[in-house]
Amino acid sequence: MATVYFAGLPVKPDVEKLMKKYSGLKVGDKIPYVDIEQEFGVGRKTYRWSCVVRKWRERLEAEQHICLACERNSHFFVCAAPQRVHGVAMGYNRRAIRNLTRSYTVAAHTNPDELDELGKMTRDMILKTSATAANQLTTDRKCIMAINRPIKKLAS
Image 1 (cartoon, one colour):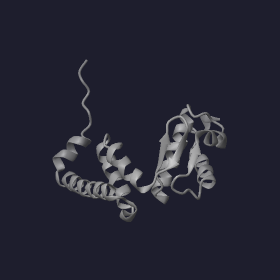
Image 2 (cartoon, one colour):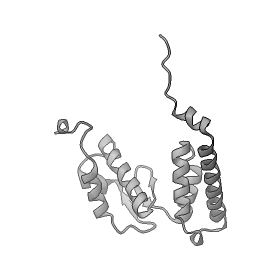
Image 3 (tube, helix red, strand yellow):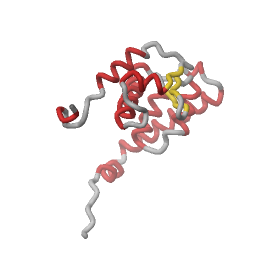
Image 4 (cartoon, one colour):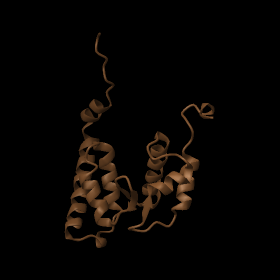
């Protein structure tokens, strides 16, 4: 069956099932991994499961601004505002440009009234830092050209 598709089976139908099943998520809701496994019939340790879940989480974040965090080997849970801001400040600093954009988006869509004093300071820091870095990246063409330059093969 997988031979019909050149790049594997499409994930959109399974993502649609998950979007329908978990349409009214609120802060603190838990989604056990077992429920997701049973929803489309593959185990959590498979590549298919990780592809579908990754696309589902990306779509939740893009369309509904819902950020899911993981409790290892147990379940996902919907993050509250302080967890979202702390997560982007601490956990997503490894992949620079993509996560710079994501950090800014999450912080910008987080209501500052829901945050404590430290959360507000963290949110403001993310917004200022992201804006400054994005400005620097767009004005410094040499940096962008260096990032996009293809890697040369070494002579053997």
